[in-house]
Image (cartoon, rainbow, N blue to C red; front, side, top):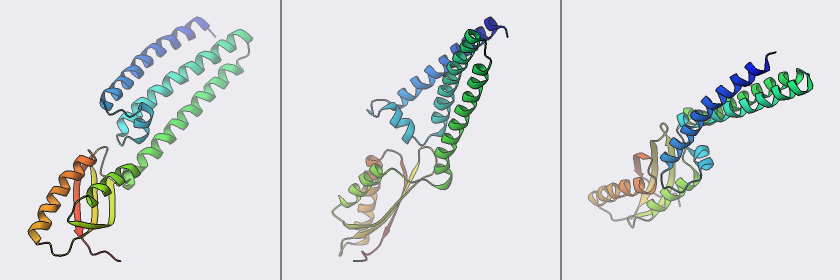
Length: 196
C-alpha cells in the first residue's frame, strides 16, 4: 500500500467534504435566523428532509474520513492491515446508521406526521383564546410537506352566535393560528357541539 497516496487522497477528500459541511451548517444557521433555536434541535425538528440529508451526509463524510485516516495511520504504524479493514467496516456502519436515521425521519412526512406538542398547544391556546369559542372538541394537524401545516379543528362555538359572527370569528382565528405557528398553511374549522 502506498501510504503517501492514501494520505493525499484522504486529505483532498477531507478538504472538499469539509468545505461542503461548513456551507451546509452556515446555510442551516441562516435559515434559523434569529429564532434562538439551537442548531441540533432545529435539525431534529425540521420537516425539511433536504436540510437534514445534506448536513447528515456531510457530517458522515467528514467523520468517515477521520475514521479512515486513523485506520490507515494505525495500519502504517503497526503494519497490521486489520486496522484499515476495521476502519472501512466502521465507515460502512456509520453510513448505514445515517441512512436509517434519515429514512425514519422522512417516514413521518410520507405517512402524514403531525405538528409537535408545543405547536399543538400554541394552536389550542389561540383557538380557546377567542371569546366566541367555548371549547376545542378535537384538534388535528398534519404536515403536507417540509413546511405547510394543515390544521383541522372541531370547535364548540358559543350559543347565540349568528352565522356572520361565526364567519368573522373563523377568519380572525385563521389569521391567529398562522401567527401562532408560522408553518400553518390550511385551516379547517368544524362547528361541533361539545360531547359534555
